[in-house]
Image (cartoon, rainbow, N blue to C red; front, side, top):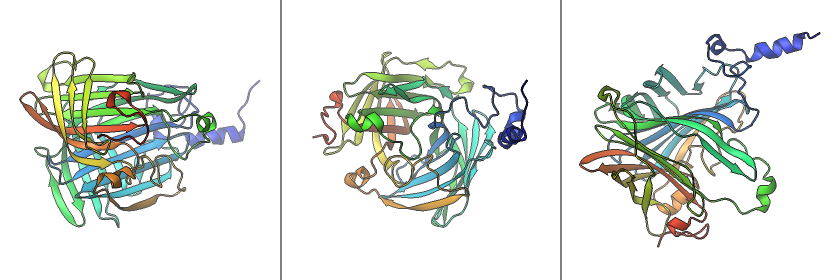
Length: 379
């Protein structure tokens, strides 16, 4: 005979939230409890915003880490040779619909179509109230799975979407009116498992050579369509993930076009592993060229990489808000923030001109790029 103790009853009540009243459950648990005990489970928003020029490039995001009981958010703005960053963290609590973290909040106005992103006034002089509207339908990318030494280190899903922005963006007291005719950007939503939070004990990894990482993620927006490309490779160029699609506005009535295997050629900036330009070729004959306008270092205040704060790190029960500026005026200074780079790029596909992001990382050897070690750079 089974029974529920007072302690058991309290434990269940403590994780119930208003979201549990919606018919959305996927496992036999309250929504606060995810379907895996893996510490690295995450659920994250990402957005970028630009005005079709290299003057300002904003990247912002928010994540929840249910098994670490943390939620955090960040914004980093590239202007000139520096990045201005604001970030916040708090305990997650029971209500996963609460997407406020200090001065940050995200509102889903209409799922898969319109989202509002807010950073309230703060001492670091960066604030915004921006609404993203999709220019094309959101697309679900292939499931991303990666093992290392037998353990699953990545198992995630992601949706991606290009669109436009409206609202206001204020930097050091100067407010820009953000209008959808000029301000474009991309967003994604990803969830699943990937390394987050404080570093784990390295275990077998301490005795082995670190694995190489080569990554390209390129959502590109043109007036009449968008092209989204993704690829991950190992040191020899073998791919664990790839896809390329052309996505049309919903009003066109056209289906998503699968473009086949993406062939990626990168022109590196001499003496670095930074992307100066790149060509994306597809099996159907489509070709896209991109030229970097702004290299934004996600490790400089964004919670990625080697900065003193990373996504999912526990900083305390109540909201902790931090900020600062980072000198990213040349390649060596950007390299100090060892992480992924979000390149704002101009793009061309035939007669179509557009803008987008070419997210790139290449750590360790990569034979197709001519890198045989960890310190190699382009000639």
